[in-house]
Each structure stands twice: as structure tokens, then as C-alpha cells.
Amino acid sequence: MSSAAPSPTPARRLPLAGVLRVGRPSGIWFKPALSVVVAVGVPNLTLLALGRLDLAMYTMAGSLCALYAHNLPYAARARALAWVVLGMLAAVAVALVTASLTSSAVVLVAVGALLAAVQKALCDATRIGPPGPVIFAFISSASLFTPQTLGQVPGHLALAAAAGAWAWLVGMAPGLVRPHGPERRATARALNAAAAYAEMSVAPSASTAASAEASPTASAGRERARAAGAAAVHAAWQSLFATGARSEPRRALERLVVRAEIALAAPADTDPGRLRTWARDLRGTGPVPSVEPASAADELLGVEAERAAGRRPLADRLGPLLPLALRTALGCALAGYVSLALGVGRPYWALVTAASLYQANITLTWSRGVQRVVGNLVGVLLFAAVTPLAHLGPAALVLCCLAFNFGAEALISRNYWLGSVCVTPMALLITEFTGFQRPGELMTDRIVDTVVGALVGFAAAVAVTNRRAGDRIEIALDTVERAREHTARLIVAERPAPGALDAARRSLAAALVELRATVDAAAGEWWQRAVPTERVLLAERTGHRTLATAVRRQGLHALEGTRA
Image 1 (cartoon, rainbow, N blue to C red):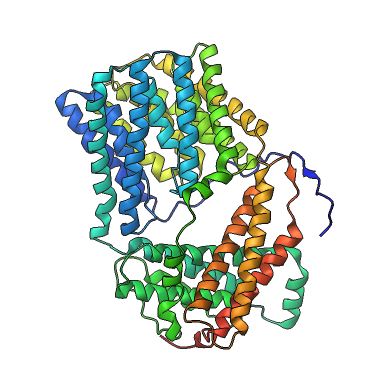
Image 2 (tube, rainbow, N blue to C red):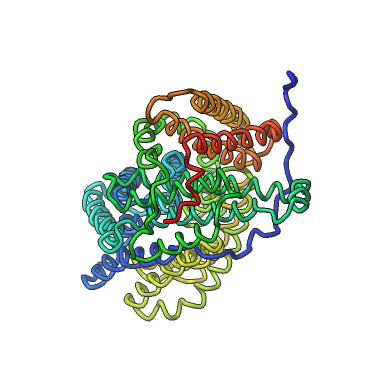
């Protein structure tokens, strides 16, 4: 490598094509959609019956926790949802106490911005997944601007806690019917991803193979497919590691993930159709497809080693996220203050808009900003259309909110802007739980705050550079190289310690997945060192070859032809 430091990568062109493209829905879109309707509906209808719909904002804080952790196995989901509820209660407590101690909008915006930054960092560090920190920021910011007295805070927190407990039960309820559903879905994704890579890797003739090898587009496509397959297999193992006791269904799923690993190691010897058949058989509640163990080592393939390795400490995971947290704090604060300067009565809407923008890099942040603005503007028009119906009475108001809750979760996986079309009228209607308001004023405030939050939030993202993105690539490359060398030494060893090669393979696979995620995040960042593309490609290719050799060393590849 040259000793000269690479020149900074300048600002890239911001994409517009494809930003609003509608994709396929998530395979489980209906789960969060139905869960949030049940979690929100029962408390809100109860308050409606009691004539206290003005308290619905506090129950919403707990109810919206039902949106989280739907991809996690139930053992892990129980813990994750409990932490989500506790985190929500902590944020609401800070917001309500602050609101009871001061009415200064300047102070409230500052506290809201700091809360949003902390929420962003913690959600990214724990990888809690969608909807990420946005729900936390929405609830805590709204709570900051709700008049309180200190004596009311315990009662309002109790309502949030009760709704949070209900949301926890709603999130866990599907486990009674399909206790291994999340692990089955993760395993099916791994099998389908491995089948896709195998299909791309099989050439009908030598000439076709030579042509494909000479085609940069075909080669890049195979690399992407292999990286996607490795990520899916890694995610499947992580899902299985989180399930607790190794029951027989879980052992059967482990054997299927092993077959996906074999396909990535030896795609030419793989039958993609059989992998896809197994993936289809994992749908529903039928028995897990029975597959003969690939080897005696199959039953222990990386499982105990992965558990022993543990996860990185939270402090280590938070360190690289400091630039994103600083962006969030600065952008949210400035958006709120600009909104105040313009005389908007609800500056927290601008704050939440800014908080919703921040993604892994500037390019993704820009795309999210475009989606947010378009979705909110269309959503305001939808609010105008539905207002006469919602104003028929409190019951109609609650039912309209529930319908938009369902619509938001049903559409958001297709594209964020589609979800925002439903989120916007829902947020506007929630402000009317305490009494009907003038629609024109609400719509004007929302439009102004959306534009302000998006513009100021993106400006803050540009201003706060993430120079650590390049450093993280170097660290990830070093980690991959160390893991590869360690695995290579075990491959040539005559008698490696029991489980040592399995553990090394798991570490190398995880390092390769992390490298690809780090490179993808850094590729959309501005004003940093150029990505060392050649070194990254070399590290990925040699790393995946070492993984394949490790699979062969364990004798797993020869058993792909074994019929189940």
C-alpha cells in the first residue's frame, strides 16, 4: 500500500431516481400491522368508554412498543420488548418531568434534541431494528410539549407502563401458535439466498463461464449475491443462537442452515431447487423438513463457540456512533429553533422530522428526507379528506387512528414514503384526542415543520462529517484478515481442538458480514478518505474462499448430495 494518504472523497451526486420506487412488502408486514392495532386499540377504546380520551397520548407511549422485535425469536423478543418498554418509560419520564418544571420552549427543544440523540445511538448500537428511534423521538418530543404538573407524572407514567405491559403480551402472543416462527423465517431466507447465489454461479458451458467471468457486471452480481447469502446465513445463526434450549425443531433448523453454508461453499455441487423447496416447507406451522446431519460436527457447528464469544460491550458499539448522535442532536435542535422562530405552535414536529432522517450515511439520509417530505405532504392531503369523518365524534376519531396505524405498518416496508402517508394523518388526529381543532392550522403547521425539519436536518448531516467511517473500514479489514489467518492455520492443522474450526469459521463469517455493512455505510458518506475498493474486494474473496475451504476440511461439502 502506498504511504500517501488517500485524498478525501468529495460530495457525491444525490440520487433521485428510485428514491420513491415501491418495492415488495415485507414477508411479515401483517404482524406489526395487526399487533399495533390490538396494542393501541384496547387501551384507546377503554379510555373512550371511560370518557378520558385525553389520556390516550400516555397509553400510546406504551402501546407503540408493540411495533418492535417482530423478527426476533420469542426468547430474545421477550427480553428486547421488555427493554423497549423500559426505554420508552424512561424517555417519557424525563420528558414529563421536564415539562412539569419549565414551559420554556427553548429548553424543551434542547431536551428533546438530546433525547433524540441518545435514542438514536442506543437503537443503532443495540440493532433493535425498525422502526428504530423514530417512535421514541415522536413520543418523548410530544410529551415535552404537553402541559404537566409534577403530581400528574406518576399517574401518566402508570398509564404508559400498563399499556407497555399489554404491548409486551401482544408481541409475545403469536408464540403460542408458532413458537419457532422467527427462526423458521430466518432459515428460509438463508436457504433462498444461498439458492440465488448457487443459480448465479452455475454456468451451462465453459465458454459461458469464461464470458461471465469477463463481465464485470456478472462478477459484481455474483459478489453481491454471495455477500447477501453470507449475511442471511449469519442472521439465521444469530436467530438460532437466541432461542435458548436446543430443542429438536431447532436442531433441524440448524441442519438446514448448514446446508445453506454448504451451498455458499460449493455452489456448483448444489441443487438450488431443493434449497427453495426446503424454504417453502418452512412456511406455516408444519414440521421442519428433516435433513440428515452433514457430519458429526454438524450438531455443534459454531453454536457453543458463538455463545461463548458473547457480544461486544455496549460502550464499544456506541463509540463509532458518536458522529450520528451529534448530527441528530444538532439537527433536531436547529430544526426546533427554526420552527419556533417561524412562530409554529408545535416545534416538536420539526424536531421529529429531523430525527427521522438520519441513516447510516448522508446519501441514505438524503433519500429518507425526500421520502419523508413527499409522504408527509400527501398525508396532509389525506388528513384533509378524512377530517369530516373523524370529526363525527370521538369513536370515529379513534377508529380512524386505528385504520391509519394499520395502513402505516402495512405500507412502510414497501417504501418509507408510503408509510408516511398514513403516519401523518394519524399524528394529526392524535393531537385532537384532547379536543377537535381547526384543520387548516394543523395542516399548515405540519407542512412548515416538515419542510423545516427536512432542510435543517439534512444541513446538519452535511455539516457534521463522519470521518470515522473510513477508520471503521480499516478496522473491519484488519479484523477479517486476522480471522482469515486464524481459520487458515486451523485448516492445515492435523488435529485442531474440538470446535475450534467451527468457532473460527463463525468469527470469519461474522467479520465478513460486518466488513460489507461497514463498506456500504461508508460508500454513501461525504468528505472522507476514498474507500480502498481493491483491498476490500481482495479481503472478501480470500475470506469467502477460506470459508469454503473450512467447510471442505470438515467434510461437509461431500454430503450435499446425500438425499434427506
